[in-house]
Image (cartoon, rainbow, N blue to C red; front, top):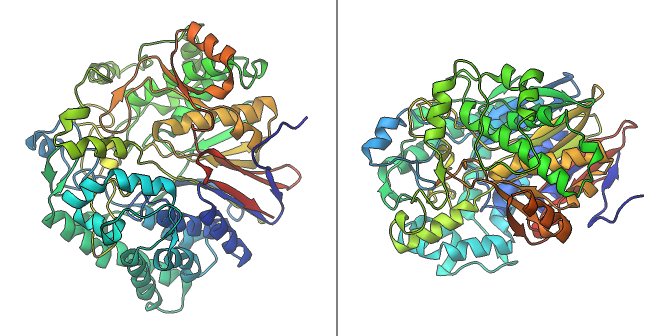
Length: 601
């Protein structure tokens, strides 16, 4: 019997698009209607999300994608996560008196990779002209889009910062000196002009589609965009969450040196499914490690909304995330024992640590040869409320609200499947309006992804020039019985793997459709060190939507979880799309925050 859902699960055969904002979803569907494929649709949706969710993503952000090409019959990861600048050394930050990379401002900027990623995807796998893909976003920048209440609220909280410290942001986000009103049209002409110039330079390269896309890429990484970013970082001292003003380290040379890459995904098998994720330069393998731990536990025998389900999934996740802290980093710089971490034997030993009571310890596993590295990680753990990194320590009064707002800097997500069987999950993020001051000539700010690095030597995620930060962005693609089946993901920083895992397990073990699995109460833990400033852990923490029911909540307290009750419909922003065995396409989106939408026909 099908349960009540907040929205119908979308069904169709032509194509499905789902994203974290209805305008992006509609723009993606428009690409399919024009004869574009899933890759065109995903890129168009992503550019629109930069316009309509600027508190969550911006043009100068980053992006990983995992996709299946019906033409090549391969699953690939597209890494558009930019690395640290050449000048970004631990010594340089220590010389500034810093022991953490600020969560905002110019010091925390890495090479903005998202634009290069989208151009690479379109050049190699898309079908439509660049103009078709960019026009929806340019139109919303230039003609206006309805301001989301959450964006208006975020700007209101940052008004003092934007007027006192980041006036270039105030010039864009406080038109006439006023906070934009929710649901009224909002425009960003400077950003529109940037994209129009990119398009103009692209089309000046000739009529060949791929040459145009490459010209746009070059204009960003070797042309006027890179020059504007270089100049701004060299000449601007911006207040950041350290409570002090700093210039940026990013240069035009850093931009020109970098390019996106295609990678073989990391994967494991689980009850007839094969799940594909990005590598250990992100947190994707946490999902895979946790699946292998849970493979020997009777998840199917637990109710999908039960305390037992929440407990066992949470305890397995704690073990996976402990290993993230101990072992994950850019594999171009550090040796990550991924084969061991994903092995059956290793998972079996980790599984034995799960008991009937919640663990309040950070328990990374032991991989021979890594003992000193693990010890250094454990010695540096910051416990929330004990490390003195919050509140007044950030400096002047405006900074407390900036740090609070910066923590809500989040992410967006897109899933697309087309009629040819191409499918993609992408999680763009970074460059949100809270991250750093707007570059006036471009109309948008830089990213703050470098805050994911540590400033201690000898850790897998220690800062180094040209190294990728260990991102939280983690889209997912899954095969069932050897057939491409499912793409899904969510915004949410360290919560991304957790919300996705609950949905996936409910889909696999309990036979729920996508919308049913998304609608059920969600949960997550902050037991392990955060990937974001001020990098603190909350041992034993568990947040659960209270709609799970009082009996389950009481059971979780009895199991010794440090329970934080979340109001119903407030946790997670999941979207998902599926190709059924009979060729039927399905899509779903969360009702939470009343923004995400799925469409298809």
